[in-house]
Image 1 (spheres, helix red, strand yellow):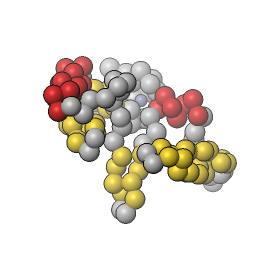
Image 2 (cartoon, rainbow, N blue to C red):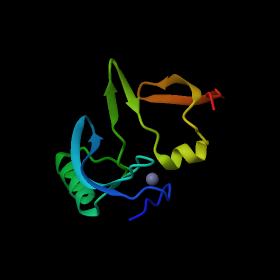
Image 3 (cartoon, rainbow, N blue to C red):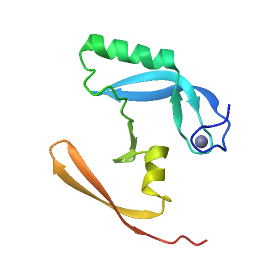
Length: 118
Ligand SMILES: [Zn+2]
């Protein structure tokens, strides 16, 4: 199956997709694109996560799965989903600034595109 996001990669079966809700990590099965890294949850597994989260009372509105932040060294890394990356026209070489705009809200601004060696 071709990746519907980038159209280049062939999706591979994975069982280690992590969705995090309220500090709890849910491991789900699905497919991942080796080219762009986009992850696609199995419908059954995403339904299972929603069911468990509802039972635990941590499934809020709107119904939306959040991407997990990854720990990297002493910081955390947020992977920008492919659809967002595209609409922001990010190449991955940009400088961005983060400003805290609320107790649980951060604003990310793309400052400039730095030209890589190519
Ligand atoms: Zn892809």
